[in-house]
Image (cartoon, rainbow, N blue to C red; front, top):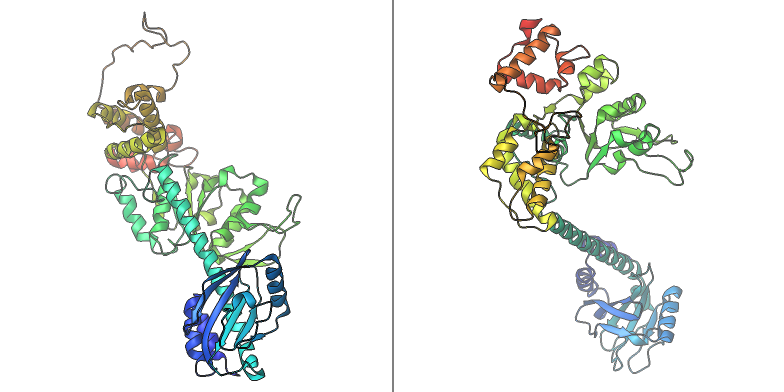
Length: 511
């Protein structure tokens, strides 16, 4: 049987062993005096019939004694074809695979391989056909295609088991987190974050780098995930690296990997975050904290998609979409020489500016509902709805820590309420911070500050506008940089511009 191309094609088209055996038996019917095919897989305690072709008979499982198992394994290692004639005892090595009342000749072909992919192919011949040398030679040619099919079947079973285990882990994780999916929902996507989500939809389909700017706790990672899941890389990995948490001497190793022996402690080759994020998205959080040397190498990755491991000479091509995030004033850092201008221009192709929570208070009710549900599941308590008074208190607070601080306040409110109500007022009181030393206290109430003396009140927006105008006048209309109004007011420049637009302040008037 010299032409086995068709059989190899069937082996490559059908990863499932039983499907391949069925197609192979139909193909072999015109080339061999075939009555049936039976594929056996070696197990720890015996053999199992895993595929049947052309109506072959088999009871599915045989237990082998230690002596039988040893003889069968030795036969597999030897690789010699065995034959059985009608009415005569089968060879000892394959006797457990043969029916006691075998009435036709058969040929047993060993299928050696890796553990889990070792076995035998038993070819049953039609009545009256002897298992002569020519038939044995033809059957021996089936060894490699069927051994490959058995190995493919082993790998398929392993992948199936891994997939089921991963699905079980994912289901368990979602149950513990109380979610229906791993991706965080963008609460406020149709409210205060609607302009941001519009820009996310615009940029997600491309591979452009994305720069997310916003105060700490404003949800930069949630927006980065939203970019990822809406992109063509959604099936790839999404990884997050906090650049500010990596020691300067380890930044290159963590981002780009290292070769074995490249430095003390490098006992093996390590793939960096860029390699592990190949065909996916890499979030570089706190990108402003990257050292200057690492900024140069990051620029090369963005331009050419090439990295070089520490201690290596070979360049590695990576296909990674970079999303950078920071709460720092990157334009100001560029002016001061603290951040490379060429990297800034490469990252800031499509910036996304997240408004702080105090500028999107319309999202607080939805955020509170989500956070209450999450905290109640975490603490094993019955969720309670926030009252209008609770929401008014939360809306009046300035939220310097944004959504992250709101989450902490809601956690406290749930715990203090004991599952009966939300103690927002008490929880929010802890967020105001400790009393300043020497602050006057109300008589009879130790530790409670006395109310301030009455002062003439003006609308809050008017007071804020006056304060911003004073700062702009002092800085001659400059907003960013070390001498800008944003630095004087200790506020992010993007936040300051948004506040000025809201209040109708034209900074050109102060230049």
